[in-house]
Length: 410
Image 1 (spheres, rainbow, N blue to C red):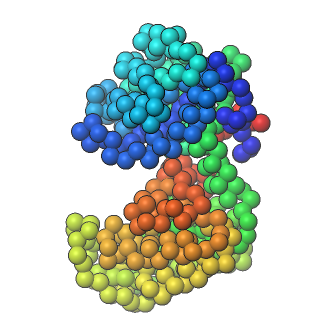
Image 2 (cartoon, rainbow, N blue to C red):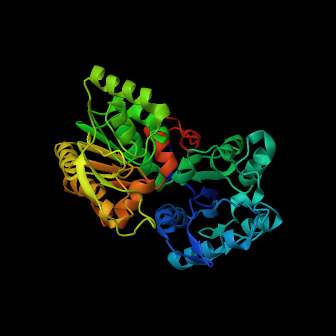
């Protein structure tokens, strides 16, 4: 995949209508935004275009929209917050049709530097469907509103949706530019290049619950990294594949052969594959998740049959921290244990602390590891925290992301 894409710095937007696909999929409670990280992340690109004298048309999805268009998933609260952040009115097109007459009228009335926000793209109902359904028509209508297109929604870049990838075809047809925004550029620079041309030693850390979620990531990273560290629930399938007793720990029995293959692959490639050497165990999963829980630590091959491993142990934490010390590039995706519980967060904290203290370029691959870094107070110590869970995983798998691929090459 060519990662050398045109960005907002590579074309003159003055007087042009520029459609920007953002990721405003923010959490809402009773119509109030509870976390505005994604809005703040979009500001540099929007401000750049305003300053250049573009007519800035913003679009995004919000939520899953399972019950059809509804006010609870309207982007109205985002328009309000954006207006405050930008210090200027963001005209909101509340029309559930997204690209109808109201949108056309709002865009026609724009002056240079004005900002319009369209309604939730998923209200059209065809945003996610295959292009040959009405997704193609919707993409064309979006392109009809604009001269150029900028994708700044990395969290959606792994989906070939109408407003993410299909729209670029029609922008190209009218001679417009398809570029990436600053947020997308940062993801490409860090995540894409970390995997394609890492500064070595390159250490990858994978955690989280299931092996199945990370099959291709494990396979791809083994070829790219020097050391692969496995933690979290997925480690127990590897331990069982080694012949260890894992008690009631999470396991994916269908993936035992795959784990054996990966361990053999690491050996044949001369790569280091690190697995837990001790485990924090309990009688069962905490309920609720942050409830007090009685734990003990045992060697990884000595988990009692009636107990469950819920975090890496202190010796493993030390081993993993040690492996990170001399790294030059570290990519981390997935926690080491049930980090939402204070007693079971120690392994994840130890890894986050090791990353915070290293001189390496540290890249956190979205999802739970990003949440853990934010929650545990290590976010500002990392080189880059990805804004997309699924998208960052697919990047780490070496897949071509539709939202990146669709942008024009430089």
